[in-house]
Image (cartoon, rainbow, N blue to C red):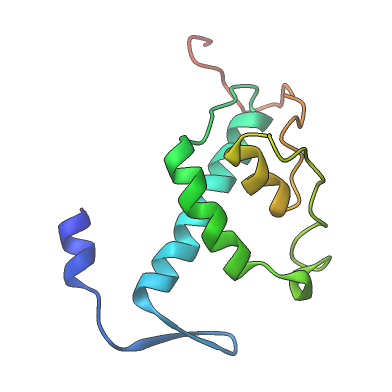
Length: 116
């Protein structure tokens, strides 16, 4: 999969709204989106899954580039304040307006592993 994606990297710019991005930047934004929304879904279904630490580190740097105060509060909630010693995953989530301790909820349609 990585090989196929790497073969698609071009010098062409991708236009998203009024922004012109390179294909690696679009892929990076997609990585932030997929990772954080997967965390959202897992928490909502009561099956929390941690974001791997190295991935969280890489994505936190990108999230600071992609999400600024201009995006708040329309697209993202305000950042959540955390202690400096909190795990990188928590800082990533907090920057994107999510509380890392958001409670698990039993929601209809969210099956837990092993439940039928």
